[in-house]
Length: 381
Ligand SMILES: [Zn+2]
Ligand SMILES: [Zn+2]
Image 1 (cartoon, helix red, strand yellow):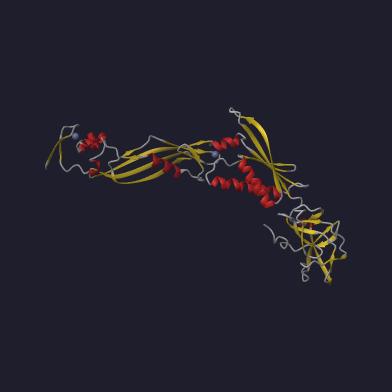
Image 2: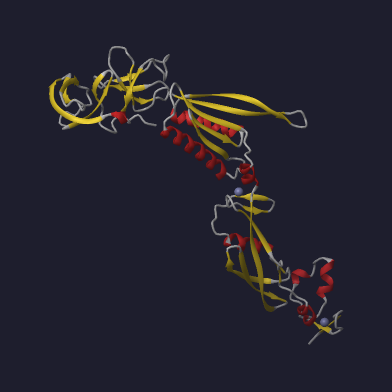
């Protein structure tokens, strides 16, 4: 064996040449130099392949399931935190810089709901010698409340979206849909990692729905989407709530959505002499179909979605009744569903003369045949 002429500073043994198989360390910084010259026996005696923390705490939000990573809360949508625990343990483990060909695996052992024991097994090659090391890191899942859930619990909000309707109360469907639209909007924002998007409170009130929203932009976005989908319009108003220490004024915005006066499926009489109209759409200006002829009806541009008209009822109020006879191109006979007398009524173009039964609506304006279910929704959004 050749001699290097170097001696181990720990034990004084001479270091044989050829031991050093760490060429990449030759130029390493000064701190490595003392290690560099230790003999193998001394080097391995104090060698740790893995540097592991005594314990790891994974902070999760007990309300929304978010995980605290780095210095912020992140929505990860996980129900099982084992993967998060594996990830955080892996990140916390340090491997000796001298090790080569490192391979490792981590096996979680679930002790209970909040405790996982992480078994990590490492192998590598150091100074030409294969080494293995096992470490066990206890992981504790710590359930806390994230910033967002804290704000929601504290009732924090910046804007209010009020959903009302013109000369009527929003229907249950409209209320539900408005709430869904708000939730979908918030969810889409959350999806992009925005943790400032939330609904603090949704409350049904006598004349509609009130929603407290985290920010002004979100409140505005929700009001816009509700009117885009359900029709109507919105207005905004602001109220000074405080001044901060710099004299900066803080406002709370209210977005008041007003759903259209008439709704899809409603039967109205524009009192223009051409008979009642079943409303098909209230987006833009009101559109529908005449129950007398089956012709299309559209309110004028000036009238928009609120033409002057008398309310007669709703499609839901219609009843199936017997089609007794077809008189001519303009008239059929049906059974009055209340008196069971045969009545001559107008024959709209949509009426299927082969049908045994047809839906009719009895109102102040008399008896009218409606389109069969589903046929009046062709212009649905
Ligand atoms: Zn030595
Ligand atoms: Zn949370």
